[in-house]
Amino acid sequence: MKNKKLVMIPGPTPVVRSIQDQMGRETVSFKDPEFMKDYKDLIVDLKDIFRVKGEAFVVAGTGTMAMEMAIANVTKDGDNVLIVSNGYFGDRYIEICERKGLSVDVLSAEWGDTVTPEEIEEKLKEKDYKAITVTHVDTSTGTVAKVKEIGEVVKKFEDTIYIVDGVCATAGEKEYVDDYNIDILFTGSQKAFGVAPGLAILFAGERALKRREELGTIREYYVDFHKWIPIMNDPSKYFGTPPINLIWALKESVRLIKEEGIEERYQRHIEDASYIQKKLLDMGFDILAKKECRAVTLSNVLYPEGVDDGEFRKVLSEEGVVVAGGLGEYAGKLFRLGHMGNIDKHVIASTLAAIERTLERIK
Ligand SMILES: Cc1ncc(COP(=O)(O)O)c(C=O)c1O
Image (cartoon, rainbow, N blue to C red; front, side, top):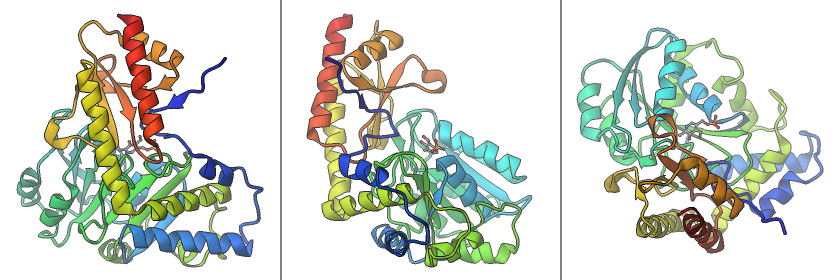
């Protein structure tokens, strides 16, 4: 009999049946009154859950598009920006900002560690930075940045817009937009929301919206806040065809979040991560991220001596679980295990058991 494969990579994460069902619905017109209400309700719920008085955007695109959308709406040519990089996705922002003609400074951490709020404060004193970007969880390292404490620091710098890349965090790691002084937070549907890939979700607080006003016409078209705000407030209007089934799927994900409770969801992620990480350590693996900055949404798991990455992941896949390989200099040295979104105890138990069987088979 053919085994079902559990896709335990850090996105796309497993999509539960009730969300799949929304994807499989017959597609209606985007002017359908029920769909328009669903879209509107989704925006209201998202703003409520993530505590933002400004705007929420749900737009077709991936996390990378949301990265561009964030920076495009709050900076203009030549502006100073500070990029805090704790790994591969922090580094991705360097190229995005350089191509946009921004003057880029970077604060980087060793992989497995994070830049501290104190280092950020010192750096912000050096120049008039128009924006700072921080990756909440860098998927390449499995580290979590102290976004709340960094928010306290950025608050002292009036001109600096605080952008948080929540792609591997939002709806798993604790995050509240206005409470944490975050000006822009974004993610993709395929991570801790547990929806198929294809949607970018972005929150803009009041300071970010004011900055957008001050910029006047911006060069970018599709990602311009001003093009989308009328749609988010009134989905009967048209700018780009909405991905109807994905929007329904996200609405179902949000319903599940409301049913569980966002605080309870955050707590579940903490408990699951600590259980999984303890079991992996007991099996002889190590975790790349230092203990004090370990994410709860994924683990980047270092192999014990003598375990070959290719063989391990091939046998693990035969045992029914798919994980991702390491990035950058950690390619071949670790595997990346997602444990975010709508996964339950059965999925976790099956995954750990498959890892144990794999170790048995390859030793
Ligand atoms: C932290 C982070 N930022 C940005 C991205 C880019 O998102 P996407 O692949 O949806 O474009 C990813 C993708 O994994 C990510 O993990």
